[in-house]
Length: 266
Length: 304
Image 1 (spheres, rainbow over the protein chains, first blue to last red):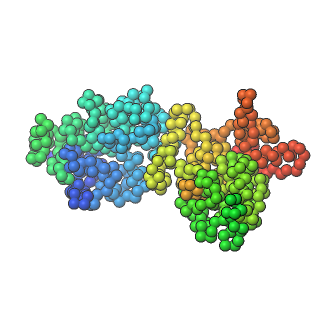
Image 2: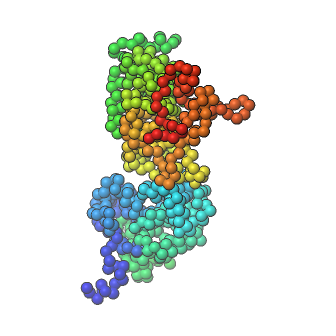
Image 3: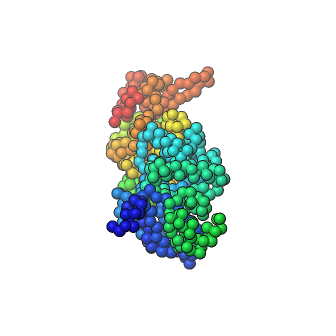
């Protein structure tokens, strides 16, 4: 073991939770992703930034197994799965997503059943995973909503009657209800006003601190990434142009695009 | 123009109204439905001389099953003498030469809407249920293509979600009729609009059940000795309608499913929903030898 290895934080020396390698995806002539690799260690928050169309959301959808690449492998270090997750059959894929991966979408309509109650939305996640006791469902839905700092007196209102910030909290409660190994956040605060944005980020930050959930957060807002992430990946035109610790990348950007991005922010 | 002008007298070629190719198609789909219990099998629902929604699905299955030695009983909401039941029964008999009956014990084919007879069905009897809406997922997923994918994935979480919300809103399960049930541990079916009272009758039953929706062009089956488990939370037991303390005001029967009949003077009286069982009970009380078979329920309790 070299001196550097011993000095490196424990986070980096352990085995990574998520490894993606050589991911490529084309939509006809359009290149969505080109040779993308990503690694996430347990308890870490990886931020992905990039302009619109840079492939960051496509990458996140692949992490949630909603989409498959043309080439590339994806592994999660979990006891129940081995090998490339893109090779899993439909059923195994769905089971894995339901039990181990939580996702919060930018648009709550994508992640929530708008006509059903908020607590029901959380309970559905537990139902899909096989929970069949009503009392347990009720208690765990309440707990997950509470942890997401959702006002419990509104837990049986349908999300369509709730404000944007609250809808995001319901999505978050749904995502963390099963204590997932991996939490994916796709622009979780975009479209919320600044004060609500700060509150939602606060909740996320606290959750991360208390439960050491491994997160991947996609955003085009550098502020969000700076607050939330440990490491950051900068994407452009389907490629990763720069990767490193948040402070390092934002203080001393190497790639011209990152320099532009950081400069534009400042 | 009457029915006798429209229907030819029966001949070997088109026995039982439907032409042979139609019957072959339905028969194949019925075998498929038996092979995959509870799975909805699409079929080419043919024109029959009653309106869609009045039992065309059940009628086509019955016409396919029927033979001259058959004895048919047709029930509409428990009654044999309603217009719809009587006309379907007469039509079946006219085109096939099969016998007609009101008695569950005498029937070989029982076509029904809304009810399963109170007398236990035997292994030589076939129950055909008319189904208006065969898709249990329709209330939670209006897109039928996605609903079929959900069936393929056995993705039934949302049906439990509906029950969860009923429990949250009302403190009990409010689903009255068409209670979703898991067949053979795999497919969830809607057992047509039968009340909760009748769902246990399908579980591990000795008889074969077909459920057929003519307008929706889907049929499914519960073969004999197949598990049919209503969806329930493990800590909230399945409850049938509590009709234990009700007495039929005409026949004096108790412990069977009752219809409530409001009275002009206010209040209401109850009447056995299975009308012919009521008739037999009255005959027995009058001293006739009317045989009543073993019942599914005794004193309002289901006997496994």
